[in-house]
Image 1 (cartoon, helix red, strand yellow):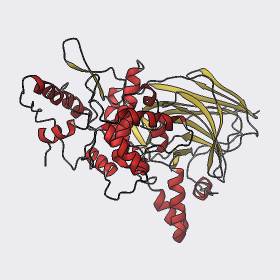
Image 2 (cartoon, chains in turn yellow, cyan; image 1 turned 90 degrees about the horizontal axis):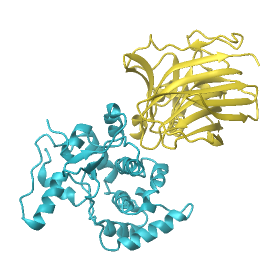
Image 3 (cartoon, chains in turn cyan, orange; image 1 turned 90 degrees about the vertical axis):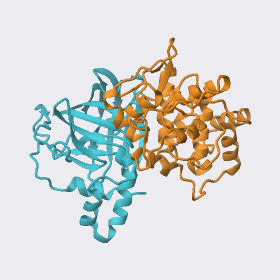
Image 4 (cartoon, chains in turn green, purple; image 1 turned 45 degrees about the horizontal axis):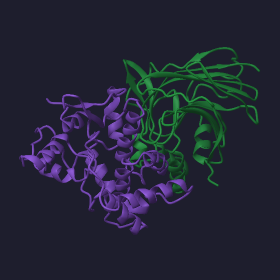
Amino acid sequence: MRTPVFLAAAIGLSVAFPRTSASQAGKTTHVSLASETAGREPKTFAPLVGSWVISKEAGKNVLFIDGRVWKRGQPAGGLADKARELYGARNEEFIESIKAFAYFPIAVYKGLDNFENGEISVRFQMIGGTLDRAAGILFDVKPNGDYLTVRYNGTEDNTVLWTFNNGVRKFVNRAPTLVPLELGTWHMLKISVHGTQLKSWLDDQPMHDYTLPHAVSGKIGVWSKTDSMIEFADFTVTPMSK
Amino acid sequence: MIMRTSSLTRLAALFIAAPTLAAAQANKTTKRAAPTKLAAECTWKPTDAWVKRQAEFFDESKHDWTNDSLRTLLLTAAGLTPPLKAPVNLGVWIEGREKPLGPGADSAIALLKQLSRQRGSPWPTRSVAGGAGAHALFLIAQHDSVLLGTIHRFMEAGPVESPAVDVAVWEDRLRVLAGRKQIYGTQFRVDDRGKVVLAPMEDSAHADLRREGAALPPFKLGLCLAGVWKS
């Protein structure tokens, strides 16, 4: 069993970023990338796995996961250095974990400590990817690196809920409707969580209505897979009381 | 070194060829016309990133595949003689101008169909049949409607095992055959006037990002090789 130590450590890191908490129930946060610098890693999100950069699209900053880097066999940008800083002589084990995890790039939103109930949405545009074109909402991210994700994959035209436990990804539930989406067009993925009830929508079309085995509690962010090239924008979160 | 017509003539034997060459070959049978020269801008260098990536994938110097008999069957059926010289696939597919398969193609297709039906069967990816064997599978699969549907076996195997450039051309072809728009810009057809035209495409604005990821030549070069774009 592979322990996602790097993820746990990174999530536990204190970041100098304004945070909200579950107590701010009902208040919608529209995450702005306007102050970010194009061509650099995002500051609003912690790019834990994968090559995440701020990119310009029609004059607006967007968050871009560039899967071409993974295809060339390079580990996530900067994380190998972080590994050496954090783990010294043990960094080889750390880098091995990164390589395994690089299959599933994730960027964690720094502005919210804990999401339990409410809504999360993000707009995404598929740019490319030979093997996958996957755009997902990451949630229930635990300190040990476990998480849930609802994602759309343009190579399969489907929307699926996945779980990631102890370094192993498992299929949970596939939405019954297949929706082919064109590349280079913007779409909206949204989830709502109320206790153990999870719902999801793709462009306002209902996808999931599923009962989770446990209540959600953890950080949130965006998710992708392998060589996907996806642009994300307008990440919005509305924490709610149950 | 800039590679020009002579290199392309060799590549014509690898099935994915520029239409000007295909036309020249067709003429050979009737008028023995001299090969048509490509425009000067339709060139590439061995140091170009996409050529290097193809060269890396198709490098077989380590002889590290496991199934020689399957590899030989595939290579013979596809009419390939290794070593394959990069670029192996120029990403120019003109519907109706496919090169016929070689001897033993029926046996190879039957075997591949059998393998495709067996869950967990060893699929001829790079570690099984070498890079050339994997490319041969791609070429053979284009001639059979059942095998065309096995692209997922390459996709699931990942970029170390599967030639990204072949997967990209394959996906485009499946899309066009299904009436969808292609996404890499590799599919061409001949119109009523005999002119080669690009099949409908979505999001051409980001085509070069996708093509770079798939080790395809830049979009403009692809169009140039197909005879569609001229400076």
